[in-house]
Image 1 (tube, rainbow, N blue to C red):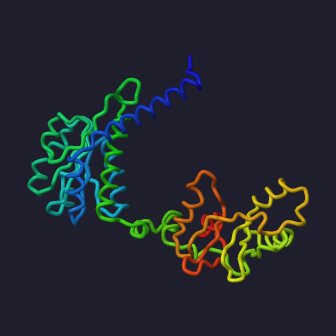
Image 2: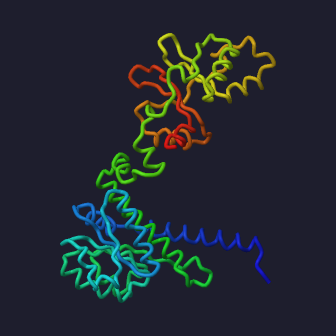
Length: 327
């Protein structure tokens, strides 16, 4: 009889929880060996080589991508192809990260002496810290797991997740050691929305001048509604005579006013505005603006843009502007 939907969900949750527990246990085991691995990579001016076979090879390929995108040049070396000419990728003293669940992978063990001749520091992300390969590497990162997430304890699930998490941790620690900045990250990500958001600033896509709706604190709410209708950006900036921001009126503020008052004809802009709105500098990256809007308990869709020096309000930036700017 086919299993039920409920059983599938139970299996899925158990697998994810098992992998999460295995990663948490590996995090607690981090010690001075991890620090040595960071120093070996961060102190090297060239590239690093990452190798593994089978599922460990897939993890190795992903780790290469993570290293490369975070400022550490990295290449993947297939251990079987290495002895057929691919060892030419090495420059002297390029560190090698070897990934293996068993630590007995023959293709990796055959490489050890050759890599010694190339003066390559050997860093092992190994699932068996007592294995033959563990005894041969210079630095050992313990990727062991109590059991796989697979109910038969066969498929490399938890072990692959731990190896990948350790690799990510290593890459990010090296990134921190090298003081890799978002600006540098953008250099390696020129395509896609992420790269665009890291390169472009708020000033590049914001609405200012007559494009935005403006109001004085004593303006009737009806006048504000008319201004927002003519310039439908989802908000109006309430400013003083020097254009310093006093507050912001959003579509949500208008709805709340209609809900709270039977007659809004006597209300002024200052009565319904949000007095301490979230603001952003025109020189901030779009990535920062996106985080301000979305990484919060209650998400917002529009920001007032304020000059940090003069405190003058320059205009508005919408979430829509960030996502549509590249089209």
